[in-house]
Amino acid sequence: MQADTTHIPTYTVSCEDYVHVVEFSPFSSGTPSSLLAYGGNQYVVVGTCLFQEEDSEVEGVEFNVLRAFHHEVRVDALAWSPESRLDRLPIIRFCTAAADRKLRLLTSDLQEKHEVKVMEGHTSYINHLIFEPTEGKQIASVSDDHTCRTNRVWDLDGKENIILRLRSPGISVCWHPEEAFKLMVAEKKGTIRFYDLLTQQAILSLDCGQLPLMSADWCLSNTIKVGAVAGSDWLIWDITRSSYPQEKRPAHIDKARLFKWSRANENLFATTGCPGKICSQLLIHHLGHPQPVMIGSATVGSGLSWHRTLPLCVLGGDRKLCFWMTEM
Image 1 (cartoon, rainbow, N blue to C red):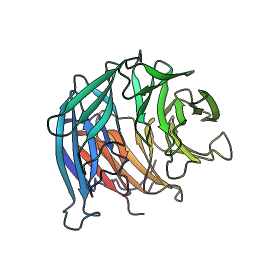
Image 2: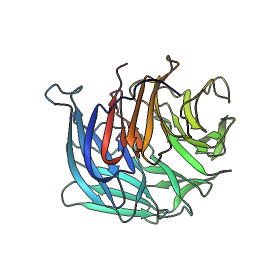
Image 3: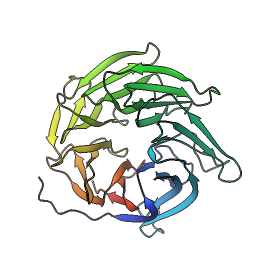
């Protein structure tokens, strides 16, 4: 579709196994480094990343493993808690979704304390999860079981706080960065709804006009923008203007798989194609440019995440992490 030359990753980090999911923490670690976690068949590795763009004394990327966590089953999704920090008294807290339809909340002080809390409720595959970003006391998750569920993190009985009934499988869920009662839920049939959790009612909906919707993301640096991939296209909404997308363009020859906004630039976003037998295509787009500003690929790549402050994204792959820096 594009004739541009494929860019090799700006940086790579070797891993011991295939990476199913990778996530930068969207929250400050309290140190110059960023927290990053990646997961595979029975493990999650947590480490810190520091790039030469952040520290001139670093050559390329400096990745330090903090801890490898045993995970009973394959990790399918992962979300960071805003309570994770490395300054003062270090604490690592994140939640995983696994192939056994359970959520696992992992907490560690990187020394003696290590806790795992298992939360059940979903009856089918869990596609995405997110922490409430201001205090981290709730987790929202969406599933093929046509529900979005929110769990209070420290409820001893593990019961859900709220269950939102959906009309098709839940694909993506995003929390408003400042308003803890606003939640965005994307459904596979092509509808994106915004819910008021106080009333548990939808207050706004968006329509892709096509399906299947595979991934959606809320631009947290400018919350009037929503993006998604459906079929082989990417779509962008201005939620103040219309329930239909303002922009829509073909992206991947085969079906698109993931959409993620940059956290450093509200006009920058990335999409991936569905993993093929050999590799997965990464496209980095800028709203001011008609064509992708960068094209990359990773060996059977999966997972996609943006750095908190740099125009840099990471894609998981076969025994490595691939990082692409965008010069915009």
